[in-house]
Length: 274
Image 1 (cartoon, rainbow, N blue to C red):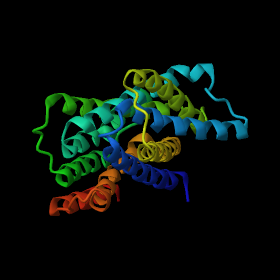
Image 2: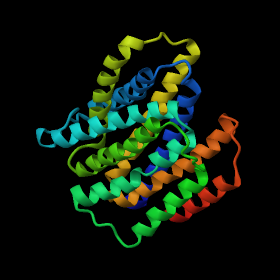
Image 3: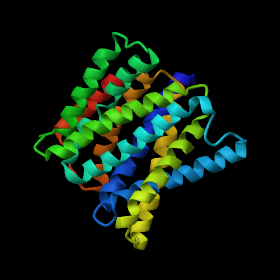
């Protein structure tokens, strides 16, 4: 399997892992604060990447030359996660999902502006097809409060910039170093911000927090390696598969029905990916 195909598989696994994380976030949102969720989402990623880097005798934070890019990835990645968690709690899931799934579009644009990666004629209709599938699958009404919708859109923009910074470090900074840098930054920031509203979790809530961390780590590792194996604009398209995974998980775990529009949207997204 060549690196481009490996990147596609990794992105699909990343989308599945992040969808599982979001399902657990939704299940635990009533009892656990957002910053506690964000803290645990990054704490486990930090621990895993630290152990792997130490075993391989690789640098934890990367070279000085790449610190601006790594700091930008960590900062915008953290802001994106926080805004997504807040938006999820304050608006319809359909509206949030559609706006957040515009991130591949922003990735392609930032890759063009920052990395000088050209957007091919094929990618333009593929992006439009995937966006159409996202709208069809989630059936957004956009009747939610304005602020959460703005946060969801800003999440996509912030994530697009963060993912572009990952690609900027491709071949220069070890993927695990990128993950540790982001996880360390996010763990410290979320840890400080959660102090005023910290609540001691129950055994069930603690298990939920651990699952958020495990699925978040899996998604982060898959995504980081995917963006370092192939051009950003190509790989980012497969992030739309998360809508399909979310629909299935919603049906299985959250007792949400699979409508005809969801199936049509999934078909369009799959067609775009192929």
